[in-house]
Length: 134
Image 1 (cartoon, rainbow, N blue to C red):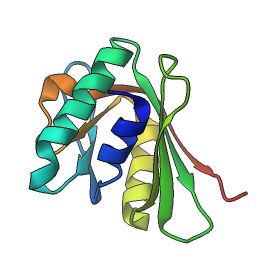
Image 2 (cartoon, helix red, strand yellow):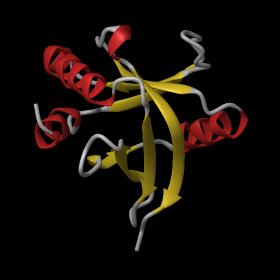
Image 3 (cartoon, rainbow, N blue to C red):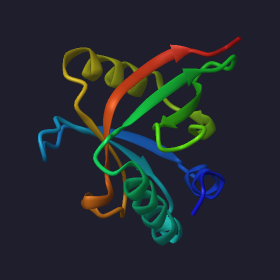
Image 4 (cartoon, helix red, strand yellow):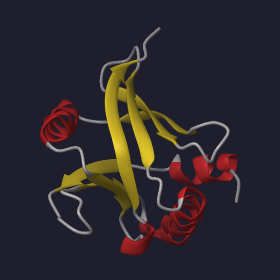
């Protein structure tokens, strides 16, 4: 599975949730929400990303766009030539504030999704919320 296929699968994300679940030395998880009919594809995409990344972790950039409440996400890793981009996703101000508060205190967070096996969740080495309007 290549980066573009992973992007097209993850583009169907319809929500985000920050949990405080602790496991494997991580202090929370950013869970992506998908409709139930996408579970198998999303699980496969995460499995492939996990295989590519191995133990290195990922960087997650959450980029503010010109439209208030709409963000682009980039999953970055040295093992891919370009980031996995998930564009134009609505994220509430409360969720952005919660993510910002969490990363300000302890950034050890996993990236996962509803229905994805916990062993396929990705460790986030660095998470950043930045302005990408230009």
